[in-house]
Length: 251
Ligand code: APR
Image 1 (spheres, protein in one colour):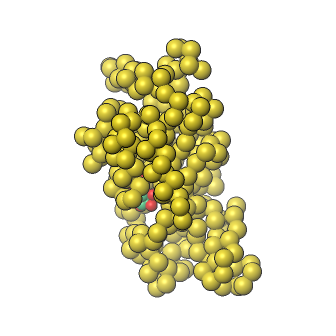
Image 2: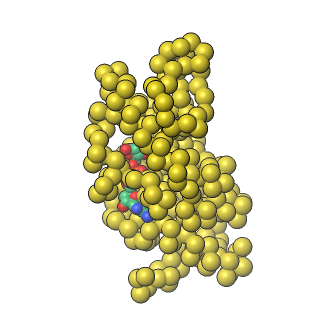
């Protein structure tokens, strides 16, 4: 435990005590303590597979079985994990603040499992199979079996995630920009801030004079711009933040 903890959280707790519009921007790091591998940390998903081989439309066109093996393996891993304390506090924040939203790059569904309903998923949802021909899509539980096909037309299905080089879901990013522009406090949690356009949201918030805190044990390209950097794991920070807000009668 760092010797200036939890005092180092005080500037953020102070801002949250005053705020009514709060936005939480999350990346893979918020799920790390649930046992979900991130992408770019050592041991991350991009260490074992190359994005261009498993996470682009061209890769799927070239070898759908290989792409499905990658996503079915991620589904198998996810079927045994649960939200961690960071997810649980972020879910409780939804009722604590008059307006609390989550914008996530994650496709794992753990924020939703923890209870967040005001959430925008910029990169889609790994638990959705989507037809490559018609508009049919379905939510799946299973994480095994052959390459999924469309129930409606029999064509090959694909995972309902956004691949590199693809557009984000219609209108979702525009809504996220509006939330970032309106927020009074923004928590940037567990993202390496390297993938656009998601990584631009923190700057949108800052330009709209929000107080922006980065919660990440490692430095990122955004760290120098943050109003406050908390170089700690989300699973340690959020329960302490919630305790500080409760102590001050905010909860
Ligand atoms: N708490 C907070 N942050 C953490 C924790 C933790 N316990 N563990 C790791 N991190 C941080 C790492 O330091 C890193 O900066 O989480 C970040 C994870 O970065 P990435 O692996 O790059 O994940 P992310 O930023 O979500 O990637 C963005 O890239 O591959 C695409 O579509 C994929 O949505 C993904 C996007």
